[in-house]
Amino acid sequence: MKKELTIINQFFPPDYAATGQLLFELSNFLKENGYKVYVFTTSNKYAFGNQNFSGEESIYQENIKRSKLSNFWPKKFYGRIINSLIFCLSSTLKIISQKSKNSLVIITTEPPFMALFIALIYKVFKINYIYIIYDLYPDVITKQKLLNKNNIIIKIWRFLNNQAIKNSKKAVVLSSDIKNMIIKSKYIQKDKIQIIPSWADHKKIKPIKKNKNKFCIKNNLVNKFVILYSGNQGKFHDLKTILKSAKYLYRNNYCKNIVFLFIGNGKQNASLKDYSKKNNLKNCIFLPYQKYCDLGETLTSADIALISINSMASGVVAPSKLYGHLAAGTSIGIISPSNSYLKDIVENAKCGKWFDNGDYKSLAKWILSMKIEKNKCTELGRNSRKYLIKKASREKILKVYERLIFSFI
Image 1 (tube, rainbow, N blue to C red):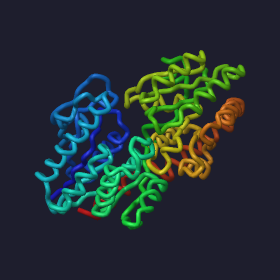
Image 2 (cartoon, rainbow, N blue to C red; image 1 turned 90 degrees about the vertical axis):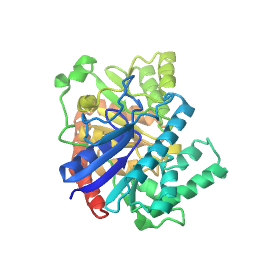
Image 3 (cartoon, rainbow, N blue to C red; image 1 turned 135 degrees about the horizontal axis):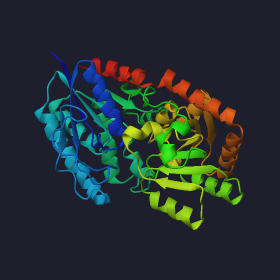
Image 4 (spheres, one colour; image 1 turned 90 degrees about the horizontal axis):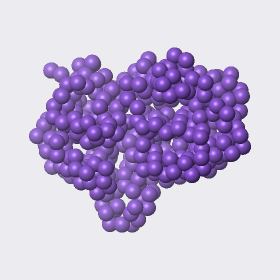
């Protein structure tokens, strides 16, 4: 009899959300290794344009069920909250209807309210579940100062979230920063939490020469020195430092053939474009999300890839985009607080350089030096790929997940 597993996540391919892409690869890996995997997700349009993906389908994965109810006003703040709550309710019914002592449920922080529901469900049904924490709630809310940490809603949320972690078979986090933030609570034991980083498939994402890269040819990047920021342009990302660096290079006439390429969207997208337009930054290019199947070409268009988080993000989020850039064999620039695990990775791997938030001049000078010292830039890129293959390849990390899941079924 096949071991059964249910994965619950608000986003799943063909949606572009990173959490869904990772879980898609995990579900396929488990299926290949003899597991029967069910996926419950939504037909939300995270970043896929206007297409809708409802009902059962087998294009990406068998046994997918998409909620048709949680798709109200997806671009509105309150609409997204309502969507998340409806999805949580639908997921609760799904979990209860499929509960079995021989099955395991994987829940995540997409949506962030799911932990509240799972904490309550557990009291009655004692389900077996693993809790994957991509973003740490309610700290994400308090860090943005949307609600005070002493607010009654936050206190209840934190209590139920702690209960969800305590009652899980294991809580998985992506970084030591998030683990350290969680264990500050006296209610959570260290051995309840396991760090499993994100990953990338180095067999699919690998260096491509620009003159053979269709994305570079199409966007006139073959003879450019490309500084790439790819992905979500949200509140937790320090994009001002990047733009100020672009401005510094442009104003000092260092911009010849240096291009800052922004691929993606998010809350900062409009302000980034306004800043670029206001300062006439001709060295900045903005493109929407590209097709996931073209990820290898978009990532390998970069000479330098930038990963940035601000002080609000410290200990509550862990950018998964880093691993794709490592697989692409690109030198990495990290912009973050000094206590970030990202700094440790780039320094231990010797694959790039770390910069403090706001230090745009040092970033600009390093970019210029890498353009001049191309051999050094190439060496850093080789180190990126070596680190990925050794520490965070698709095969290595998915086997860690498989061993974890196997131990609880």
